[in-house]
Length: 266
Image: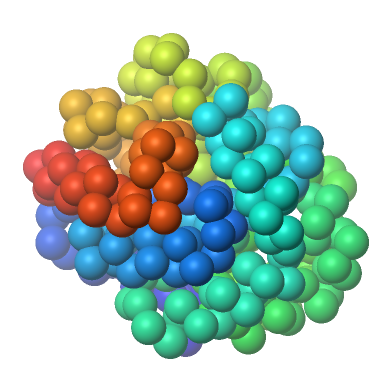
């Protein structure tokens, strides 16, 4: 089963259970790759349906201060994309939850587009999210990811107009990631204000599942947003716990994941 099929199967399982999916983000290498491995196992056990591993990069333009600090800690610890792919290969033999990599474009470009997609697929990674790469410049990596069987998960924002939304949705696979706010991750804006409109528009253009993210951190927010979509992405709330507890954060991260998942069971 390739990455696209793996994500489709996971969303089908969640839908069959009458639930909405929890997509949990953590920054790989914060505070170490060893801790990341334990956090992934904890999230898997706590009911996360998909886990995003953030690839640290020195200019994380889509991320707020919480994830920026996590990225800096991971980079200071020497975390590399190659190391994350090795970690993913080890994890996919141990956990059932599909792994998705969220990386800015530069680390992937430096690694080599074809080699990255090949190595990610061989490591068992299901899909990739590249938040700073516009569709108009994504042709080479789109072709490479399709050849490798990796899902290309596009982001759309409240500011994405209808015609461009149609092109983005047509190019995507796995799911469509709807940004709930106009801004960066971890914001305190109203996360339900635009998601209803965006999700409805995306659903009119594609049969891919719709996920909502940015600014969602509590079970109440997750339940409110889930009314409009198939999955909820939570990142900064988990990363903040890791920042406070470091290598001992597995228990608190697991507790939050369980609470969020419970809220998504309807």
